[in-house]
Length: 197
Image (tube, rainbow, N blue to C red; front, top):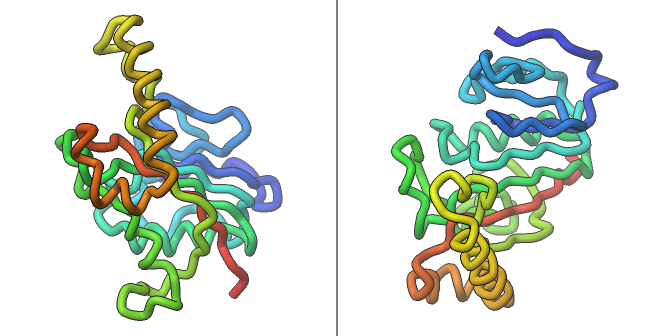
């Protein structure tokens, strides 16, 4: 059951699936009440407890891969954004996307095609405009300290920076042709904007 926390005019930034990492200047939403999010809500249940167009920004880091219907979620996230609002998504790249037992899918550079009405064979009816796309070889660095020593985390961070710099010269080429040469990418990041209706 969702908590009532503020009037829609006060809600400008939304952090979906906040988990143990809430953002101070966002409304944090998670289904695990013991984590004390601002709003307790299952992101697979639609609609979410907010009015349409209530947000300037939605952030969802490593959430979409856990949901049953990513296209339905994207449609709901579009409903919540004002025209011109930003949707910032981080998801596992397909090359390493199934390392977590609850992941239902991995993602690729083709994901934005499904939100582009100029590509009718793929378009699912929810329109977003892609602003940027980046591959990350070493993502969620804050989690690495649980399983690796500081020197290993440091080396992985340096290696990741070099690999990312080269890979993001052309994410399309590196995602499709070269990703397994470097052991796969942990994450692909998309920033979309919601165009006007």
